[in-house]
Every structure is written in C-alpha cells, then in structure tokens.
Image 1 (cartoon, rainbow, N blue to C red):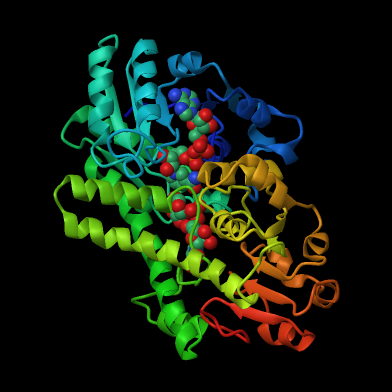
Image 2 (cartoon, rainbow, N blue to C red):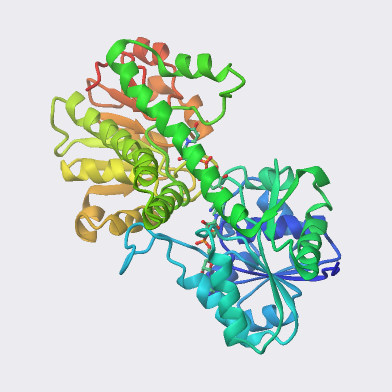
Length: 472
Ligand code: NAD
Ligand code: UDX
C-alpha cells in the first residue's frame, strides 16, 4: 500500500473546500493542496477575513483557520498541484448539460474531461485519481481512456469516492460520515493497493467498518441512487401535503406517524415548498437520461415523476399566494424570508425561492427579500439563469434588504422560503403591526406557530396543513 503524503484536489467548491479541510485537519502529515481555475475563489479561500470564505458552512472557518498555511493550501497553480501529488481528487462541477445531445438532462462532463487531460499532460509519475464529483455510471472508464491515451504512458489507478455531505451540515457529515464509499478495481494488486491507500486516509478518523469497498460502477451508481432515494422521500411527502390540504389531515402529523415506523424512518419526510440545491435535480435528471439511454423507459418515467412533483409543489405554493391575495399580486409588496435552498448555507442553486419569485414576478408583484447569508447579486443571477425576463425588470421588482423587519414593512404577504432558525424568534406582533391588512403569511417550511400568528391576526398558510387559509 502506498503511503500518501501529498494530495491535490481539483475544484475548490462546496465539496472540495470542506472535504479537503477535514482531511487536512485529521491528517497533519499529509500536505493537501486545493486548486481551482477560479482565481477569485482561491483568493477568497486565502483571504485574511475568515468571515468571507467563499462558502458559508458552520464549523468550516474554525477548521480552515487551524490548518490553512500548515498543511492545507489553496492555489491556482494546477500543474504544480498535480505534479507534486500522489493522489488527486477531482471535485469539479458536473452540471446538467445546457447544449447538444442530452441538453437539459445529461451531466456535462466537460470539466471532468479537462481535468483528466490536464493530469495526463502534466503527470510524470504514477498517481491515484479519485473521482469525488458526482458522475454518471461508467465515467471512470472515460477518465481511464483519456489518461491512458493522451499522457506520458504513466500508470494511473482510478477510484470512485462519491461525497455524501449535505450543505449546512458538511463538516459534521465529513467528520462523522455514516459511511465512506470507495469503488475501485479489486481484480488487480495495484487496484487493491490504491483502494487501501485511500481507505487508510479515512481510517484516521472513521471506524474501518464504515468504509464500504465496491467495484467502480456500483460506487458511481450508488451516489445517484442515494440522491434519488432522498429526493423521492421529499416528493412523496410533498405529494401527500396536497392531499392533506384538501382533506384536513396535517402533513406534519402524518410524517410523525409514518416516521415512527422503523422501516420508514423519520428523516427526509419534512414537507416543504420543494427541494432545491445543486444535487437532487441534476442527479435525477442524469439518472433519467441514463435510464432512457439504456432503453429503460419505465425506469426513466418513474424517477422523472420525483422532479415533476417538486415543480408542482413550488408552483402550487406560488399560485396559492396569488389566489389568496384576491387573485392578484400586481404591484403588491411580497416579503420573502429566506432565499438559500436550505438553512445554514449561502448556496442558492435550484432554490425553490427563485422559482416562486419568478412566478410572482410574472404576476408583476414587487418582492423584497431578506436572507442572512445570500447577497442580492446572487438572487439576480439566479433569476437571470431562469431567463424569464430581462435583468432590468428583475432588478426593478426584486430587492434584497439586510433587515427582516424592513423586508416585511408595508408588505401584503410574507413568504417563508428557507427554514433559518432566526425566523422562529421574530417579533411577529411588530411585523404584523407594520404590514398591510389583511396580513398574510405563507410558510413554505412550517416553522411558524399557526395558533400564535392567527391570534395576532395573521392569515396563515402552511404546507400540508392549510392552517387558517383555505388553499387551492
Ligand atoms: P462547485 O461549483 O461549488 O465547485 C466546483 C469548482 O471546480 C469550481 O470552483 C470550478 O471553478 C472548479 N473547476 C471546474 N473545472 C475546473 C478545472 N478544469 N480545473 C480546476 N478547477 C475547475 O461544485 P460543488 O458543489 O463543489 O460540486 C462538485 C461536485 O461534487 C459535483 O459533481 C457535485 O455533484 C458533487 N457533489 C456536490 C455536493 C454539494 O453539496 N454541493 C455534495 C456531494 C457531491
Ligand atoms: C443532498 C444530499 O442530502 C447529500 O447527501 C448529497 O451529498 C448532496 O445532496 P444537499 O442538497 O446539500 O444534500 O441538502 P439536503 O439536506 O439533502 O436538502 C436538499 C433539499 O431538500 C433542500 O432544499 C431541503 O430543504 C429539502 N428537504 C430536505 C426537504 O424539503 N425536506 C426534507 O425532509 C429534507
């Protein structure tokens, strides 16, 4: 087994940054260098102000402050990083393709391919390549082919080591991972040694029995499967929430009742305005594409339904706002509490908030957003990405403010899009007093106390509970 003393990670994003910080902190004898083409991102990782790291993640700044400059380095010198390392993690983005074959469905592997080509051209000695990015099953074969055909005839071992961290809890998820999955080639001595070298790193802080070793293809497919199963649970409970609203059942009570069944379990059955984040939609689209490409149309249809329910849930929430506000939100101020796709992150990729905003902007509402960690420019870039209207129009009708009470002042309605803890302890009487009447709250996360708000005078809608507003 090769003892690893130098690691390079290509991609300093939500996965590369936290993962490498945790490896560096647990393995002081390993030099870890995270490289990226994005010079601003690297400058931010190296910045003196730890409050302004490119990623907000609880516990991250403490770890970075402890190991940065000791055995954790951030650099734009990708070639040097590759040359020095015995093990190279590929943690680059694998977004949904926006062009050509598989547009809107398949994973875009151009960044993965670029990494493989760059490694091949620079490497002058044997290396272990670790796929950390989420990729379609059998991508390791593509990487292997590129490495073997374009390089300096160096031997590479390729491992699949998908990342299961969730944003907002990434440090804990890494430090106390339920399992660490390593896929590799068990049929050769070199393959087995490479798997053991990677396992030895994780065994520095994880019990050996949590390290699951599989073949490459099982590992790659397990990542897509895990995300599909998790998202499917959210869509299942969200589908039930619509039934609850029509029948008087309470979705949170239903979730508690079914979650007590140990076969079902209580996690990932919290009904919401819809799941967001960079992974679920992209990975399920990819799974749908793979299934269809394999001629498995029924399988493709099955997984696609998880996404259709998610869009339905977001649309249902937005349409309910319009209907409840007497069928028009034109020119009305709607306050958004939260924009991030979940609490404790500044990530807004695929956030439900942008879809709800987009629909309300189509109805010519004026939106005022407060989110403790998301900047206005990020909100505009999310809306620009949807491409429904010009940037000027988005900027004219959506503003972000840094004070939640300011966001809610003179609004006709408040929509809660993220479950930030601070929202639970607001002075709702003060908010109510400064709103237009009737004052509506649409709680897309079910974090408010319906009775308390109703007593103050609010008209309240909660997902799957209706509360005191009849929902559509
Ligand atoms: P990200 O966009 O935050 O970071 C990716 C980084 O890679 C970017 O900074 C980009 O500049 C850099 N990059 C792209 N091509 C490069 C190249 N050729 N050379 C150097 N740098 C390059 O993405 P992320 O959220 O960290 O996700 C990375 C991968 O991990 C994806 O495949 C994703 O599906 C997977 N994943 C993400 C999460 C998550 O919670 N975000 C969790 C598990 C797995
Ligand atoms: C997910 C997976 O959980 C993680 O294992 C994988 O590595 C990356 O994708 P992430 O997207 O960061 O992580 O967050 P997650 O906690 O899974 O939440 C995703 C979305 O689902 C969020 O918008 C969240 O609010 C929503 N959600 C989650 C619900 O609406 N209800 C739930 O019960 C759980």
